[in-house]
Length: 162
Image 1 (cartoon, rainbow, N blue to C red):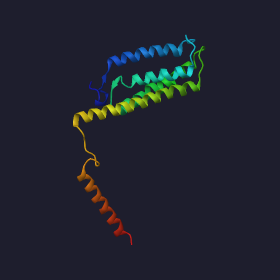
Image 2: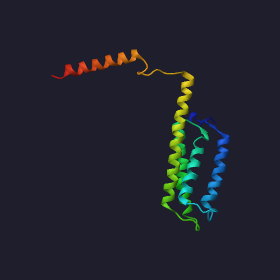
Image 3: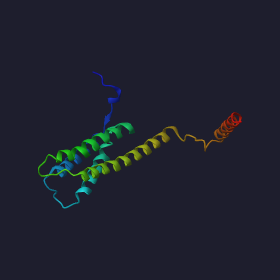
């Protein structure tokens, strides 16, 4: 059976291994009866979900849009919201709305950094592949033709108004 083309993607195995290790550590921290060290719970939530999101974004070799969507779904919805939902059923843990806020803030910051880096990386690859693509500011002929088009547009507007 052939899979649709949008389901063909590569998995970065080293990044996946790092993500799994982080996931195990975060599951221990999230579902253990008490933290082994005294640390602010919200700071811990923020950094755990920041790291998970930072790493998960790069597990699959996807376009920026698809990686963003998948990361939001997995880390934000299933991880950030789901972990607190599961904690509400544990007798030794409690549901806390501020934990969800910390989770989502950590996810959001990591996602923003990933998107910006991914965009910059793609621009760098395009620049290496195709060289410098001139813009209107770089090309005098393009500036002249743009100015002519603008003047023609102004003349058309002045003719149509009495």
